[in-house]
Image (cartoon, rainbow, N blue to C red; front, side, top):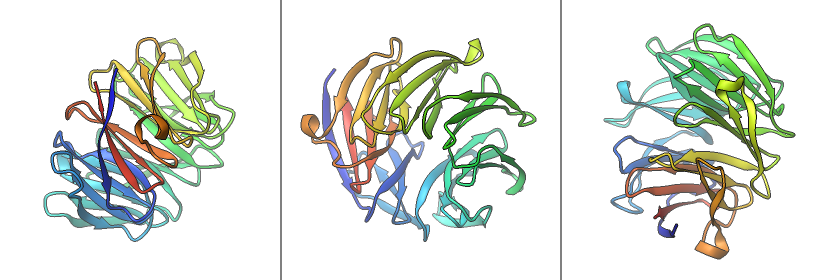
Length: 299
């Protein structure tokens, strides 16, 4: 396996917290501490287009394709809906006065993770709050949806992972998953495994079909693990960390394949916050507290 740094995108004035695909196949959105939401094109490096100014920091973005709307989680201010065709804010809702850490869609519902330990269920067609689920005393940091089992998982700063039914939003299981805050929960592309990471620097893998029994517990990084993403062909996954590194793993064996860091590949100088693995020339995108977005070719 060879890693090559393809590009570095600079446009943010502060830490970059999140990156998501714009579903064009070669573009993505980024947002961070400066409140800027920028759209980038991998075919036109470093020519970002500012599509929104949130006014506050942004941890969470989500693209709702069928309505052509970009959901922007404004910390302490609520949700903005940006129409992606003309970049106009269509709707806003002050659903909270705390941080918004994650936004996921399941059918006609939006699941929104908040800093006060609550998940808000919002009805997408009416853009109205349907339910508040109080899960933890501290932040809900991540949500993952498993369509195959009709479940969603949450990871929180009380160190737990909770599994809920998507129909009635009933709690099905609580996993005392980590020894510190759970920062990321992700289902494998086939829905068979749940991957969790956190401040304890461990990567844990749980068997969905075995009542979420533990499959592997890997001390994967030196410091907190912020995110996980899977390669388009499902053969690899990547983790990123506060230790400034990105690590690539075999998805079948869970074995470490490659490390991307400053000494080896001129990687990030500070915490790597989010990852996006695109189908565009198998490029992996990372963003960091160093204000930079880096693009990596994995061959």
